[in-house]
Length: 84
Image 1 (cartoon, rainbow, N blue to C red):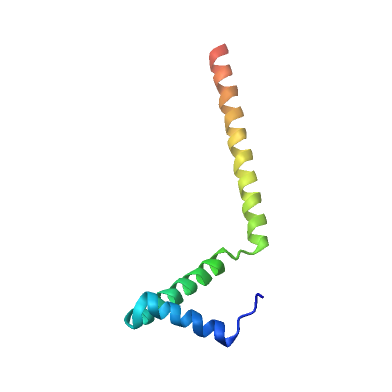
Image 2 (spheres, rainbow, N blue to C red; image 1 turned 60 degrees about the vertical axis):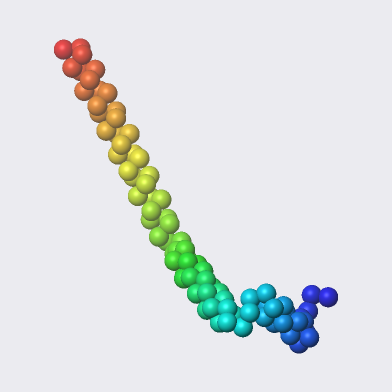
């Protein structure tokens, strides 16, 4: 169980031939090949170097720290303006 023999493959080919017909099988194979190719390209695009992730994380932390500093500076200048 779980292993495909030649008989299993021939039976599957016969079932596909009955369901899809001889004219649609090349189209089906072509579209299946394109789908697999697209999937592999998607996996390659997702493959990211861990160093890039670390660099991006550090950039985000730096940006967050800058925005916090700007908020503090704005709050201080508003207090100074209000007190004057």
